[in-house]
Image (cartoon, rainbow, N blue to C red; front, side, top):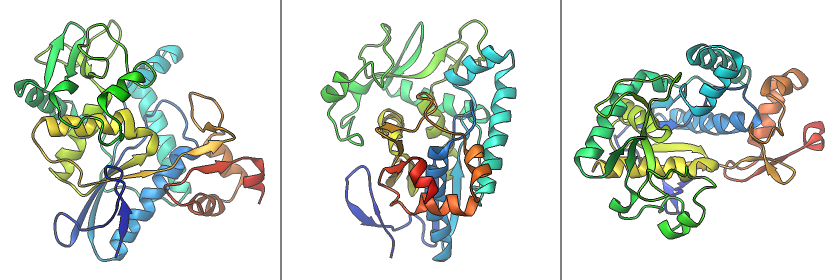
Length: 311
């Protein structure tokens, strides 16, 4: 019997699949604008083990993990390097997959790229607009959080509590009716990639990408949605809001892994406090590094430093 902690309720629940004999799992993959670090490896390894275990129990598992290949950071780095967004994204996608191979991570059954599902994203946005859950402005299309009962449940906070932090993890935009409202579609800017839409040329917001891909590949009410616990808010909260706003059931179980911490800080690209995974794998046996990561309970913070790697 497998019991997992559901991030939505905080309860440990017995895993019972939607479809007898089958399991459907989706976890958020990387935004491919730089080389992966140990934090990316930790999240991927957590779901690698989960999927392997589910298969070991005899379940027919469909495992999906996406590639975010259009994003503000990808656009910015491509401009800095004088290359195109697709070229940059493919380069770092290849790097990510190669490093996961060195860690003996099994490939997901499907690894969708966000740019391959823009039509599916537009369909979901259209459903939200038709249901009065979203509104269009000159800068794009936004989800109206006031229209959804229970927004903030996954984060464990009320909308008022979340508003107090608006500006820290929420994009501030004068076009929004509420600071918590978030972009479903971003109007095109000069020099940026764009697609045609009923609301004018533009590109998808981050959160709509995973909703469209997971529902398209796994169907409504799929079993497990996972990722690092830094994705709980705003990413997963907003994914959940989008799907519920369409009147459709989303993930039945939310599973999140803890972060990798260097001293008092989360390991992240933005903080610059990491070695690339390739550097670590060149220094240490990949099997030892895999074991090191898996020694820490998947939901706990993994603290790392020179002493950790030396033992």
